[in-house]
Image (cartoon, rainbow, N blue to C red):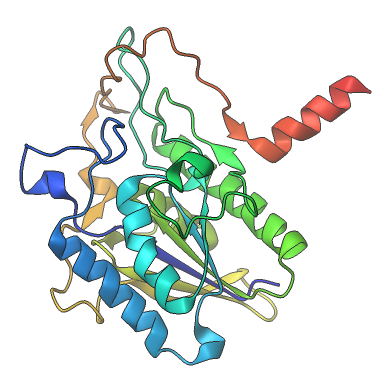
Length: 272
């Protein structure tokens, strides 16, 4: 049974310091880390290595975006663990403006293994896919709830001897995950690059998960950098401001979407 969930945001992104950059994967909106961001990722790994062995994560799940995989890599290397790619941990995008296409979706774990040898595409397939049409704030919270419910269930079924997991994701998704674990969608939280949150399963009573750390950066020599909170979202007329999709994606199909486990169950039921 899972006893501890660690949640980290990715490190400092290259596109924050220069408008001239190339995506290693060729995917739009998929910048790599800066050298400073790579250092942050290494400091996160060193922090985990400094913990007693019975406190270190034994499973790593990462968003498929390059910056998150880069952040996961040093921890995977020092702890001797594979990286499991989970699309449910992907970036949050606001709803697309009508007629502008869809938001990007990273490649499969098998394709991403080209860039990160630590990825194990055989042992884990993504259990959730966010819609490429974007999400409002309630929808990203709903996604976090579904991902956590399915991920905990799947891990405890398929990896019953593992008690501590690390999730590496993006600011809005990290906040939504943290809020879901404490059952409070209004909990104030700002997360900086490579900051770490820790949640411990309660033995009995009360909420299922107890906060041990919230977006802490004591192990980062540069401290908190580029912190972000839900209050930073641009709002117009009470709604999240729409964003444009990727040019050329107007005729692409937005699928799969949602819980893969639920979709598979529905297919089985419909075939009976």
